[in-house]
Image 1 (spheres, helix red, strand yellow):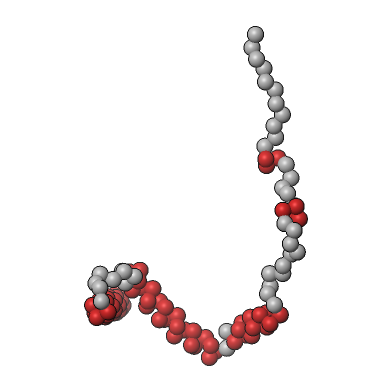
Image 2 (cartoon, one colour):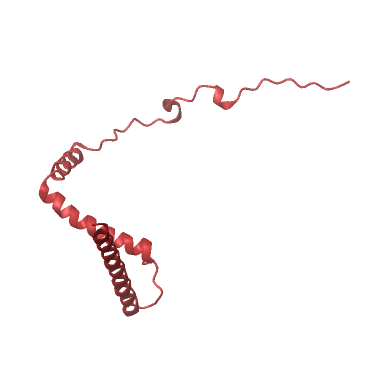
Length: 117
């Protein structure tokens, strides 16, 4: 005689999710921060619209782009040598190489423009 097992099972996703009040006892905390922090954020956003701020940020963005290029394209994140002097030499040579590559790209683009005319 075969054995038959009957069970009632419902998958966990079939039931309603627990409410947040069931899992925590603390009072809800506002996420916007204090009024003082909000005033600072508002002032900073207002300052970011000024031409002086945008000019200064453009300088920083150019520097950040150069650093990012040397790190990602030329492997400046890891140094091959030990010691401050040798590390400095590697950084100077890497920067010089990046500048040479940039000059070659500019020269090639100028040549392409002159050939297309």
